Image (tube, rainbow, N blue to C red; front, top):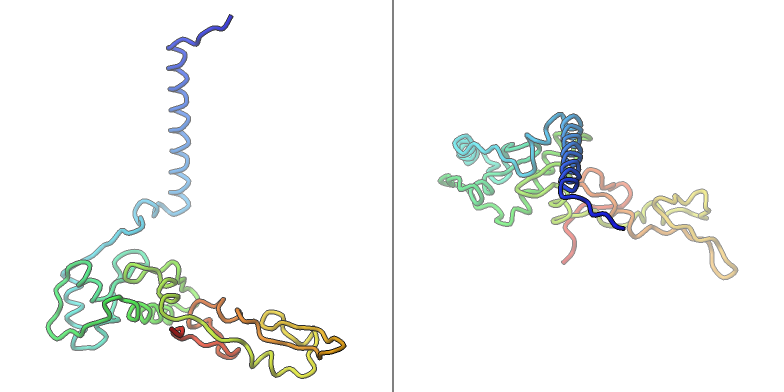
Length: 212
């Protein structure tokens, strides 16, 4: 004979499951808090601390000092905007005599990312820094990229061998009865570099706007 579980028993089971889920959620919150030094709650993505009066004053000052389109203000953790973005998105007043910056923000945002990278050096993380609503990684890849091939490294090697043809930059092909050994540049070598400072010009790479 099959015994039916009483409604009271079902109620106790559901209550126990609820308490278990609640305990798991509490543990997750505590772990996230300790791991992020509780910034998980205070620095949520998109959290903006925008001081309209201060920023409008900063934009007004840059009209006479220059750099209106690339001047920035920190509005959140690793989050920056320039004057034009503040005018278009946050409704800041455009100062008299201010130049018209790029309305798609691409060129100016990349210039700002370059300035931040120069300032922060090796500590700069383009995927962690946001400028005008997008990460610097986005702006770098949107506007310019590291192009070219390391021909100046691979193509000048005489009598190439597997030992003198650098495998990270070149492809070595052993000699055959009908052809000599070759050391040729890897086509995708330069594209692995994602910022202007890491794009190795000494290897024949160039940071530039891709051809249309």
